[in-house]
Image (cartoon, rainbow, N blue to C red; front, side, top):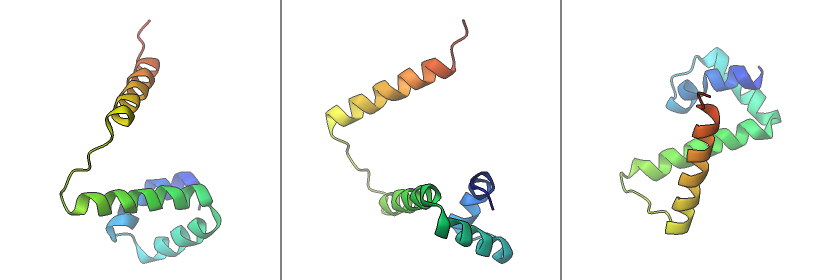
Length: 81
């Protein structure tokens, strides 16, 4: 399984609805691919944070920097000229 194939079934894996045959390939890929391990771990952590339904307040400066970077990226990818 390649990273792109793994990402295509990522939601099913995290939700626990993945086909068992694909699950084995998924886990085999993850065992040897650190970037994919990081992606799955981050998703699991995000789900854990939001499971309780309590918002997590970001520090003001971090939130401002995040918004600035996101705006810049959006402008770079959505320029019409």
